[in-house]
Image 1: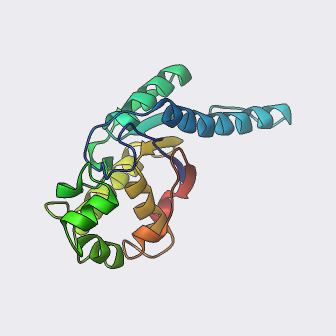
Image 2: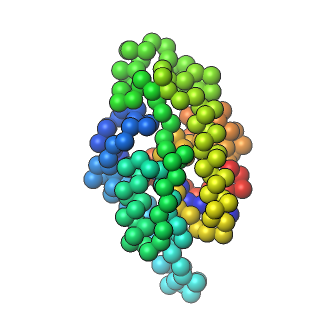
Image 3: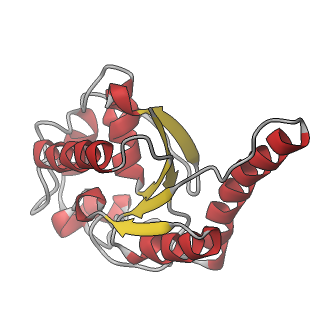
Length: 197
C-alpha cells in the first residue's frame, strides 16, 4: 500500500524557520507543486496511451491545515473531483523561538543551540520548540489514522519537509535518528510504502 507525499513549495517567508507559522506560497512555490502534479498526471495519461487501464492517480487528497499546503490541496481536489481532508497532526515541526529567524540569526541569538540540534535532534530541541519525540509521535498517529481510514485508496498527502524527512528516515529503517540527512526539495513528490511507516 503506497501513498504519494508532496512537499509544499517556496513560501513568502523565504529562508526562515517557519515550522508552525502559517505563511502563504509564492507564485514559484505554487508552480513547483503544480509541476510535480502535472508529471504524475502525465504518467497516468501515458499508461492510457499504451493500453493500460487509466484512472486518476489519487482517490483522496489529504493535507496539513497550514495554508501553504491546504490551499493548494483544496484547489487540486476540486479539479480532480475527489475529497480533500485536513489532518492537523501533519503540520510542520514547531521551532519555538526560532520561528521566522534565519539559521544565522538563530546561531547569533541562541549560541550553540542550532549546532546541537543539527548533531543530535532527538536530544536537543529549539528554544521553546517542540520535542522531536512529540513530533514523531503525532506524525505516526496521523499516518496510522490515514492507513485505517483510507485502506485501499490511492492517497496524495500534501505536507511539509520535516514530516517527509521523518517518513523517509523511518521507511529506511532509521526512525528519527537520521531525520536531518534526508533532503526534500520544495514541491518534491515521493511515493512511500505505508507498510514501512
